[in-house]
Length: 201
Image 1: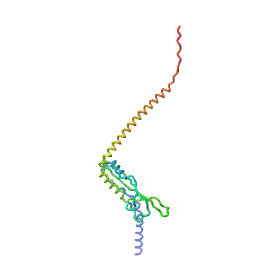
Image 2: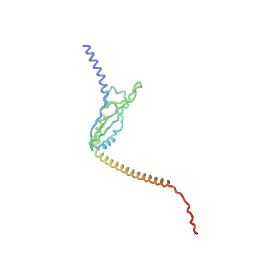
Image 3: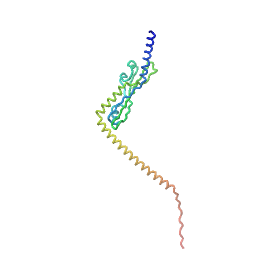
Image 4: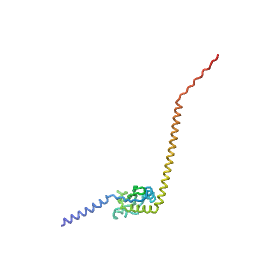
């Protein structure tokens, strides 16, 4: 019975060591949702929310998959999002967000100090998509109009650029033609032959 108890204790200890290792090795999954707006409108909303700028966290606790007892040595927690926009239809966009969390590890001996990455628990991603949903619900119609106006301005600018490039191409063609004419004119050799006087008797 003692051997059985000892073996069970050994297996239990082994599981306690192996399971956290497997959990920490898993990659955090991205959170995704679909919104009834174009990709341009959704991206504009995300820019308004500051989603493409990283920011400091008040603490690591509550944002990563790590026990509280393992956190105290980490300082200056920081996060940034990796965002993917996938147009599903004309006015339907899938947003996929994943938070990359990092913090400074302060080694007491000063040998292994440095920034380390952590697995997000999904709170940051869910919060971002919730805020995006609220923003689009409140400003979606105005944003759609602004985006349409912006697209028209972009199209007008592109047309102006195309016209300018066409005009430049015509001027360059004229310059080349004048250069060819100049080269041909300079290559011709001219000689002057004095005219003999006419003698009359």
